[in-house]
Length: 575
Image (tube, rainbow, N blue to C red):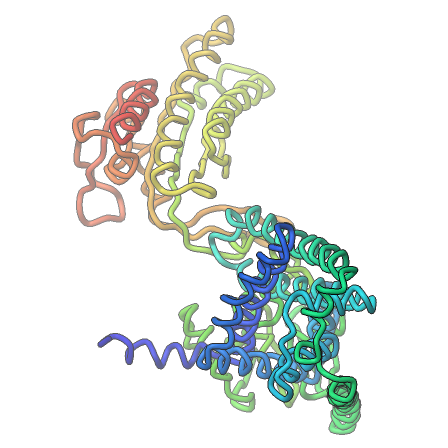
């Protein structure tokens, strides 16, 4: 409890309109999921739906929960209408305007159902449950309206969940399960409604069933139904009128902005556009089809749209609470660095983008945020060919290139077979990365097994080229794991995905040390421990690493072929 006040200011700074809308949306989506699962029980029987709806209603109508739920519904609807007014540019991918349109259509579609059930119960004590609702749906063909509502609500919610989770590190692993749920839940729900409706309409042929289930207490009188219809029509017309007012307000705002003058935005590469005051820099880029990196689509959830202001930045509006939070999270206190999605300049502005726009344009979101920049635990494996210089001195260039390529091919094959990714080729050496899609322990074991396979593949290569080589091809391997920065590095057409950090540098240093220690591989103590190898499995030695003050404990591997057996033994012990 003592730590709560410490985190509260950061939570407040992190909260903006979008975050409030997200939280409200999650609450509403939880209700939709609960309702859909209740519908799905129609595949069993209407009685099963009746039993489950009792618990569903007991929870969602519990006063504190009901207050939160209805508050979230009104807030989410209000912020959706506000988003319609605020958004100045709609040239995002189709999925974003689709989400907005679907969300704005839900209140108009759900109005009749909510008033007929909830308000009817409150005003007149109606007891409409599944038998009555299904009968009304199927007898009056309102089932198609309800099916449309259910589909729209589900798609809208799924898009929102996707936008929320797609930047999370676990999303790629969870995506197949989320997709399965996104397909199965609404399918079972609609089938449940259909099966329940068929059952009710079959029972409705029985006069006794109609006598007990279609009473005035349950459905109300004609006058009460007319009153509820008038309320529904009035609220629907009011809501549609509100949307019309918002669209009119957008037109008035656009006219005033144009009359208020245009400003020039210079991108630092010779490109200049003129836009009305009030547009964000990112919206200006979208309007004029200027590529601009933006992973989150202008939601102030990433920092990839960052720009650096050229010249005086004193006249710019102060960063919003959310913008200041995001900039603080990426560790910048430089007032000349701003988020393009949040900055709405009122005067001419010159700037340049901090991320290469062709990697991610404003209208194209990243499916792999790691390519923009992410901190991850990876295992780096450096391997280098021995004697390539002497090899080149005594052979034709074509022969040298052929042999080096065969060497790198043998190494790459071993890396790929064990779940790694060949990353950089530097001359006759290669950097491989493990852990891009695996946990640290699995990544360490993959790297060790890959080193063993590299040795075996080089043996086969030496045997294959024995008639052409005066001496067998040698190699050295260095393996180390730790936190690194991964992302796209480079300029224009020369961009590569790679890893940066001390862990990568140490792996390269260990590979160099295999020459002086006369061994095939050197494994850091970090990798040995994380992989779960026994403490006595490999001889330990302390070595001095260039750039580090303290010596580092490593494990010397005279024969890399032994590593696979050691890993297998460690896995059996752990099991």
